[in-house]
Amino acid sequence: MSGRSPQRDAGRVRGWAGALGTRGLPPAFWWLWASTLVNRLGTFAVPFLTLYLTVERGRSAAFAGLVAAAFAVGGTGGALAGGAAADRFGCRRALVGAHLGTAAATAALGLSTGPEALFAAAFALGCTTGAARPATAALMSALLGPGDRVRAFSLDYWAMNLGFSVSVLLAGLAARTGYPVLFLADAAATLLCALVVLLRVPSPPSPPPCDSGTDAAGGPAPRRAPSPGHRALLADRPFLCCVLLFVLVAAVLQQMTTMLPVAMAADGLSPAACGTVIALNGVLVCLAQLPAGRLFDGRSPFRLLALAAALCGTGFGLTAFAGSAPAYALTVAVWTAGEVISGPVSLELTARFARARAAGRYQGASAFAWSAGGVLAAAAGGWTYDRLGPAVLWSACALAGLTAAAGFLALARHAPAPVPSDGPSGPVGDHRVRE
Image (cartoon, rainbow, N blue to C red):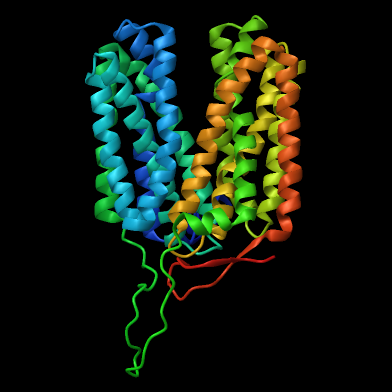
């Protein structure tokens, strides 16, 4: 009887790890990744926010929409504030603070009853969740070298989608015990996430201090420039162009949760069929993100983002010709391929652009772009669908995606080149833009 060889099994494990892009990443990353997964597994409140307000609190749909808008507006401002806090206080401290604030705001939202309190809690929750995104990206960038970042961001994006998909299913079951329980469970999961980051994720090495001192020989040490703040970011025209293109791509992608369900319902699809078609997005992301992340290494981020934008625009443009569940599913597969590329690659490109001592602000600007795209998707998408018709909306999505693709290709000559550092786990310092 032949037994299994431990060496062969170990080789297979290493082969799978290499294929999925999980090999060679430091333990600090995996703790940060685990905190992301825990956080997303406990994301119960936001997906059920409108149902909570209309069913549990007896509010109108219009009121629920305004509260959701307050959450979105808070997210855009929180992204910028979180990036600035990451630069001023350190990305690890900013992330822990954002998680603690999120836990408090989530619990407050679940326990509030008056309209003013609900608005305030939703806005605060948007601010704190928005602040966590740039802090996480900046911390991940600081812990990893440029050769590992795309894989790491792909793994993180996969964890976000997997955790969110599972949390929605769990929340649907837990809602039977009462909506306040969902909010308190969400707050508890966020506290656990903050605890993981505080106890297991080390602070990355800081850039040298700004004040002058003496070198090893006793002479005056070279003086570093002070933290550039937002001035360096606002002077970085290639990156600002990328931010505008990120807004376009985000506005197209987030039609998934705004006008796409409306269009499917208008074509006679049942709520169950609509949910199944949209759920295909999460399934495809979970299946494709890990192996795809390995393929992104060594490729131009601008060309990858151009491909992503073209796929997103084409996928939603094809929605104009869909009329059945299989046809809509085909369009979902096309634009999901663009999402699989754009999520991690946009974070990696932002990390390359980021200057020393301003990495949080750069990641905050990137997160702001995706939040602003969501606001634009809801406002412009709804107006276009109602006033001009669905065909015009989907044509505009195609045009926006192809315009963004052309913009990324035009910016390719400004590709930022990361400067190597002496750190064991990768650079945390400056990145110069190669003109």
